[in-house]
Length: 132
Image (tube, rainbow, N blue to C red; front, side, top):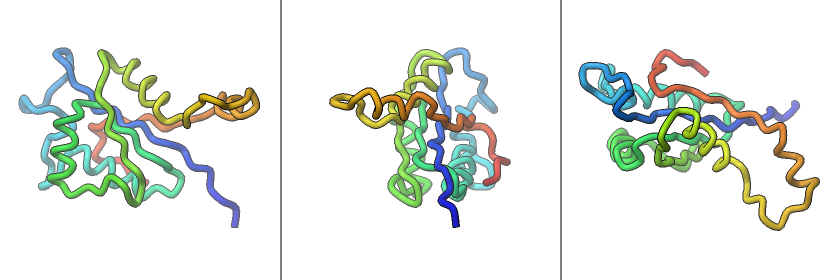
């Protein structure tokens, strides 16, 4: 059986003064059937065989607290990296993408060229109906 190609996922969960809130609540942490909205997305990404690591960009302290409360394991079945948000969506995605690259110091041009075509999956935190 052929090994599946794995893609890292970037889960955008940022919030700022321009973010749209639902019921005056940060969308990622909106409760739906006793789960956070973001929890549904994480569970789908963890179950997808083609997803590697998961990078979540948002209000780091609030996300860590909520995900620990939800008993999300940050190490398995997939490693979850929580990153502090930047000033806008584009910066959040670019920052997470750069964090998904292995350290490039002391690598030759051939090693770096392998990352030129790296693809990632970008998913919004407010898509609780996502499936694997």
